[in-house]
Length: 75
Picture 1 (cartoon, one colour):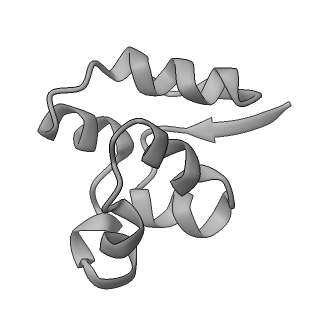
Picture 2: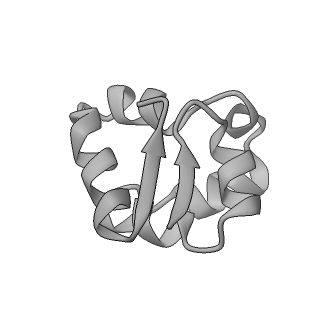
Picture 3: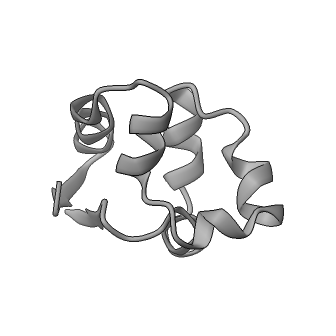
C-alpha cells in the first residue's frame, strides 16, 4: 500500500506522487495544478492547510486518499 504524509508540502507531494493532483482536483482544488507550477506558497502549504483555507473538513482529504489506496500518516 502506498503512503502519503499530509504534513508534507503540496509541492513535495505533487512532484513525488503522480496521482496527488488528480485526487485533490476531485475534491474541488481544480487550480492546484497551476499553483504548484507558479506559486511558491505550495512549497510551504500542506494539503491540510489548503483544506482549512477552503473550508473543507480534513477528514474528506484523508478519506479520498484512503479510498485511492493510500495509507495516510500524520493526519
